[in-house]
Image (tube, rainbow, N blue to C red; front, side, top):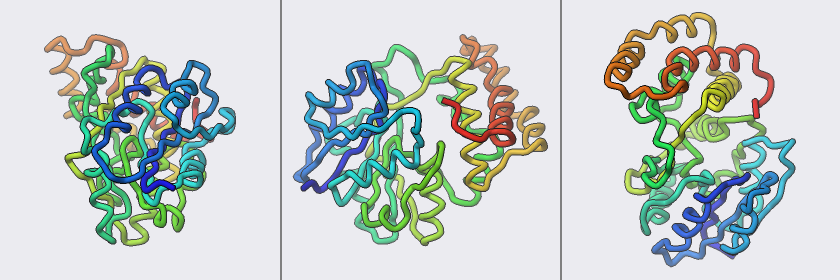
Length: 284
């Protein structure tokens, strides 16, 4: 049996997965740690990398993938009393990451712990401009969520006591299963802790298509959590004075160097609206 399960949802994870597994193996802890991967059809060598690291792999069919149900499957299969969730491209930054991440869970009022994500200097693709300058989530559906529940939980780097999950579960959720779980914690009177000393290397870069997909899916997910995005939200965000000023500033400084960064201030509200108003399932 294990004390802690580090659970990763994988699909064609690429070379960063090896760094993640190495960092987990090098943690300074006396706890028994297992690595569990819920894999939805990898074909790029991911399974071989997991096998070499002696990780336990649970296969699921890719055509039925759902973030909430896949996360529940990971928790069902986990042996640890604490389950740590990592994105497949999130690399712990130091040897005390695990202990620092799970430390807040000793407080009975804490239902989940969530570490930071910081840019990964080893990746060839730099962090997306609008993620780096803090404006990626400027749209109003995110503000509605924050007003109700506070800073958002992210399963890119989180820890949850298994007994808390057994009461609440993630449930079927196309995207944003971490946010849904946070709403359940809130209803139970439990809070999310955000330790500053448990970061992972994790950032995003986008093509126009991948950016549109993410924003559209987030609109769908937030609508399902009771934070819809309507026509008036679209108008207000489309003409957001501060975001448009930041866009002009970044353009004049020569920092906008690709189509996704150029189009973001208009693309995000449009795609969030489409996802919220018309979305029925995850755009994969």
